[in-house]
Length: 330
Length: 292
Image 1 (cartoon, helix red, strand yellow):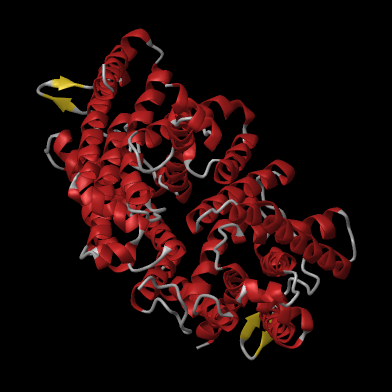
Image 2 (cartoon, rainbow over the protein chains, first blue to last red):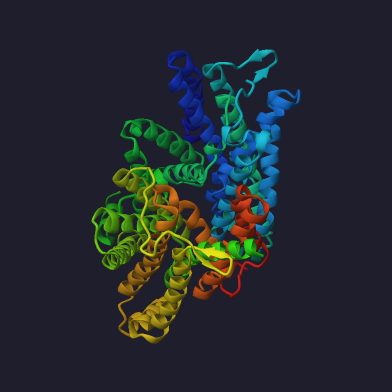
């Protein structure tokens, strides 16, 4: 069996196992965490397109997440639109705002881009906080309707899990198609050497704007899925810390590939649950983990694993005499 | 008119705090071309420092101030030696430094909450808490002291950096590390010291503001971001730029809360920051923040 078939078989087995998950695990808290992990995977995969593939820093992910959540929640409550359409609208609006914010800011480098995206996220949060009756200010929006499709309501976490699983699969397939396309290669060339990319006739700024637009959709859709999962949103979910959390997940897992954001989302979510009893120390440890990852694993877990795999697969180094010796024997 | 002057005085006080934090950003940027996201937490540690030495340990105020400043310079030096230096030696890019300092700020914030708790603390002002009346305007002595001290620190920093031998070596190490090393300057020590001074400035801002706003673990986040806004608006990397930017941010903030709506002040400040980054990203002085 070649590698491609093996990967495909592994994928099918993984999806089958995930489909069986809500039937085996009935604890609704664990199901909630699993569903949240799915939402994080969507958001982080979008983030990975900007950070991992295009090499642009962004700390405004919570802003897109908030726009998606608020848009979908408000539309579903104040208009008669089906929830699924509201979710897509949330993603599209976040995507549009991602484009708007990207157009003037892609000329900036690292820290300044980081600060623009932080400023964007903070403005979104502060507007939600001061939005009066529309956004419910600090109290947030309760009683957000559940998703129903073709007369079937996804009213329990176990049922909603499948919606998120489906969304994860679709969004990951879209991501893989995007990054393997001509645009995906262009993203990587912008990341590796923007000057060379421009010299080859690529419109670097437009590519960066494209990356942010795509990221916006992933973030907004994630936020919308979150709003209809929990049924309640408030500004305190969409803080700068949330953006940092997203970026940390991508960095820990490893950026610029399919598996990194998935591994990071799963591991950090589980770590938070495990460290929960420690209270304040939980967050201090989290801070220390971020520093440790940056120091010892700058390419994340997936980066470390694939480097190891490459090392194992390579032939053992030989001296010239050894090489000649082997040749003589064969 | 009286209201206007009152607001202006308040704005200058807040602005002086942002200016001190912003000067730290600019110093670090000049020394190593980097950005730390932990300035807000250093500011918070400075405030807790004065609370600990002055209120808890009951040391005389001048000694407590010196103790806080020395501690903060040490913290800055240690941050560079234990986190930033090793990261750079491992070939970390600017984004890794940004994220690592965010990790550091989360670590410092929560460690502070474990040590001192999450409630607020009061630190008395040595200048008295009663406002003084000057021509129809009431001014709190501590507020005026903050503005004066900020300018004094700015001038002291200018003299130190440009006239003293040590300051000159720091500038040389910031400008060209290889050439400075070839001339026998201990670049590693110089960069560490610059971080120490930058963190010391944030700590000074924290200890100055403590009698006015009180001390709590969460006081740093917004001040850190606005100090950065100050540095960017003035022209990133310039000491005077940070002062001008800081005062401007402070004035924008108080006038927004005075004449428009106090809930909108942070939105306006961030919108101001974005506008500067979009339309005049070089601030008041030219530098190389632009990619092309």
